[in-house]
Length: 377
Ligand SMILES: *Cc1c(COP(=O)(O)O)cnc(C)c1O
Image (cartoon, rainbow, N blue to C red; front, side, top):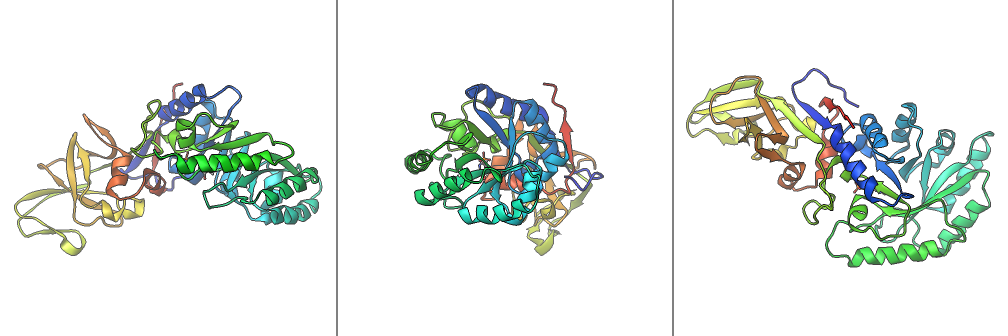
C-alpha cells in the first residue's frame, strides 16, 4: 500500500511478468495440485492486492500470508479463495479468522484447547480451518514429536464443531542448495510424521518456490509459490531455473539537480568523496529511508545505458552519482532494471549489499510509489 504519489522515484511492476511466472509453474504442476501464491510482506514489496489479482488470473487457487492482518486485507478486497496464515496467530484472534474463513497455522495442542473455549463462546461460527506445522528441520515452528502430533490430530478429530483439519505442512531449510543431504533428512522426517496420522487432511504441503522448482517428485498436493512469482531465482545464482523467470520489479528515479564540482570539493556526509578534478555530480531523490541502503554507496546506477557510480554516503532521502558529463535535470535513472543493453538485477543489488534479493525487494518502502504495467493475458 503506497503512501506517496508525487515523486519522480518509483517502482514499476510488470504484471505480465507476474502472470507468466505463475502461469508457467501452474502448467508444470499435476492438474490436482493447488498453487497458493505467497503474498506476504505486501507481496514481497510488489503490492499485495494487484499481485494477488494477477496471480488469481494466472491460476493461483489460494494465497499464503504471514499475518492475520494481511489475510484480512485480502478478504476486505473480495478475495474469496482460501487464505493460509503461515505464522503463529494469537489464539485470541481465532474467532476473527473463523468468521472470515481464514486458515491458520497451528503448532501446538494447547493453542487448540484455548481456541476451543473461545470459539465456543461465539455461536454460529463456521469451523476454523487449521494447518498443522511440522518442524522437520527448519527449527522455526511446528511439531517435532510424533506423539504430540498424533494427540493433536486426535483432538481435532474430536472437535469438528470448532475445527476443520484442513492441512499439514513442513518448510525446508535448504531446498535452494546444491547439496541435498539435509533436504532429504527433512523429507524423511516429514513423511514419518504424516504416516502416523489416522487420516490425512485435505492438503499435504511442503513446497516453497525452491522446492517446487527443483524437487518435483514429492508427496504433496499444494505448493506455496513465493519469490519465483516475482521472477527471482530462490537460490540466488546457485541453481539454474527450469524455465526462465521474468523479474517483475524495476526501480527508477531521475536527476533532480546537476552541478559541476572542482578539485578538493566533497560530496555528502563525512565528505568521503573528494573530487580530484572537475566532476559533474547528479542528485537523485532516493535514500535509505526508501530502503535504498546506506551501504549502496559505491554501487552503480544506469543513466542513458551507462553505469554511473554512487559517490559519497547515501543520505536518508537523497544520494549523488558521478556523471560522465553534464546531463539535463529530469534524466531518467535506473536503479533496478534494464536500460539499453545493460541491466541491474535485484540479485546484483543484493550481492553488493551482502544480502539476498528477498530482503532488498521487501525493504523498498511504501513511500516509493508503485506503477503497474498492465497484464494483457
Ligand atoms: C515465505 C514462505 C514461503 C515462500 O517462500 P519462497 O522462498 O518465497 O517461495 C513458503 N512457505 C513458508 C512457510 C514461508 O514462510
